[in-house]
Length: 136
Image (cartoon, rainbow, N blue to C red):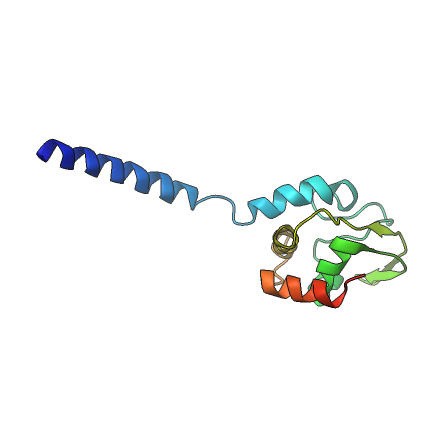
């Protein structure tokens, strides 16, 4: 009986170590991976945008002010002029309709907390509500 207790204790301890270690990962890792796969080719890995053609996301006043509108832009894209940090951009952005509501939430939260941004957290419910209001 004592032998089983020792094994159980060792297995439980190993499980706690694995659990603890998994909680120490990058906070917005899933959002980062999605951003790198779907957004970085235009907005760059560092969120700086592309040479006056694609607006920056890093320290961008539009990102800070847009809140839930970002969900609509990610899902459906956008056309027309946009002013970011005092500069006007007029390059169409294709939407990414294959991303789930959850994935869009992860991307937004990654952007909101990267490159010096500190723009708060959007919940899945907020993203879903935004997407309901902008359905096309």
